[in-house]
Amino acid sequence: MSIQDQPLVLDENFSLKPFPQVPPNAASHTALIIGGGVTGLVTAWVLLDRGYHVTIVSKEWASFTDQQRLTSQIAGALWEYPPAVCGQHTDILSLQKSKHWCMVAYDIWEAIASDPSLAALAGVQMRSSNFFFPCPIEELPAQHQKMREIEGSGVRGFHRSRNSIHKHGIDPRYGAVDAYEHLAPIIDTDRAMEWLMLLVQSKGAKFHTDTIAGDLFTQEQDLLHRFSADVLINCTGLSALALAGDKTCYPLRGALIRVLNDGTDFPKVESSLAITADAAQDNEIVFIVPRNDNILLIGGIAQPGRSELDLTLQSPEIKRMRTRAEAFLPGLKHARLDPEYPIAQGLRPAREKNIRVERELRTRGVMMHGREVEEPSRIIHNYGHGGSGWSLSFGCSADVAALVEDVLHNLPASTMRRRQEELVEMEESAEASRAASVVRDAAPIRARL
Image (cartoon, rainbow, N blue to C red; front, side):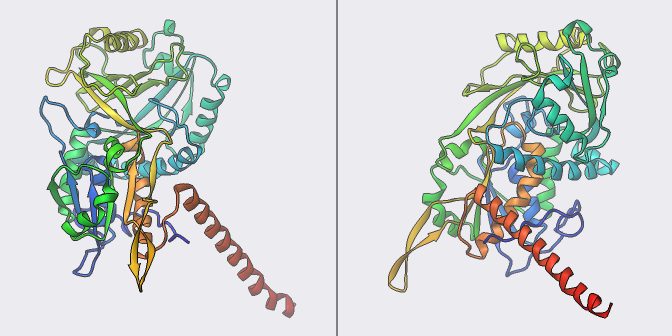
C-alpha cells in the first residue's frame, strides 16, 4: 500500500522564502534530479522544503542570449485548465490528475503574484485570460464541460460574456460569437527560470552540469553511488525517450512570434486571448499572450513528430500563424518584432499516454539470504507534460514527493493507475473508520437517553 499523498501547504511543508521550510541534517536523504527545466527545478523546490538534500544534474541550463533557449523558456506559460489550447489529452487518468495538478499550481502562482516584490522577481502576474468560440459553447460539448468545471474549480474571476469580443477589439468577421474569461497566472519564463534557479540554490540545491545518456535503469546504481543519492528523479522531458526507454515520447513542435507591446503601434494588449484548435473553424490555434509589460507572444502551432528547429519568419506555418492572429486582432498588423528574439521555437515533450508521474516499474534480481529476490528500482519519473509544464509543475512535484516516501519505505512500485486506486481505497477506508467512530461515540448518548 502506498504512502498517503501530502498536499503542498504554504508555511507548513512548502515555503516561498529563500531557505528550506524544513532544514536538512546529516541524516537527511538525498534526491538526485535529472533535468534542469521547470519540472526539475520545481521538484527540487518541493523536496528541499521537506528537508531533503538535492542535487540537480542537467546538460544545459536556462540562458538569456539570442541563441536557442530551453523548452521551459520557449513555453507560452499561460496557466490553463486542461485540456490546454495546444493539444488534447488522450489518457483519461492523466486528464483527471491534471485537473488536480493544475489547481495546485494555480494557488501557488497566485500566492507569488499577490506579493508585488516577489511577483517582480519571479515574473508572475495574474491577468484576465479569455477564450473565444465560433458558436455558442453549448454546441461544443467538450468545451462546455471544461467551462463548467472551470466555473466550479476555484479559479478567480470567471465570467462568461459575449461582450468580451468587442471589449478586446476582436474583428467580428473572424467568427467569434461566444466567450468566457477568468484570472490566470501568466509567467515571464526567462525571469521565472532565473528566479527558480536562484531560489533552489538558496534553499540548498547543488547544480552539476553533465550529459546523462542511455537508459537510467541500467546505470541507476552507478548514478546513485556517484552522487551519494537515495532516490533518482527523471525530469528530462523529451529525453525520456532514451533515458526511460519510453518509445511513446515524441516532440510536439511549437513556435511563437514575439512583438513589442508598448502601446505605440497598437493598443497595448493586457489580457491573453485564445481560440483552441478544436474550437477553431480551421483547426488552427490563435494564442495571444502578454509575456511581460513589453513583449507580446503570438501563436501558435502544434506539430507532432516534428523535431527540426528550423522555422523562420518566412516559414509557411509561421506566416499563416501571424495572418490568423492579425485577422483575429487587426491591430497586430502594425506590430513590430522584438529585435532581440523575434521568433521562439521549441519541442514540447509529449507522450502518447500523456503525463507520467510514477516509479520505474522494472525490477532487478539481487541475492538475499542465498536466494534471488526482485528489488524495486529507486527511480521516479516526472515527464510527458507536453505544453503544460508550468501549469502542472507543483501538483506533479507534490505527487513525486509522496513517491519518494514510497521508495524510502521500500514499498513495491505500482503503476500510476494502480496507485490512484490505492489512494482512493485509503480515503474510503479512512472515511469508513470516521463513520464507525461517530457511531461508537453516539452509542453511549443513545444509551443515556
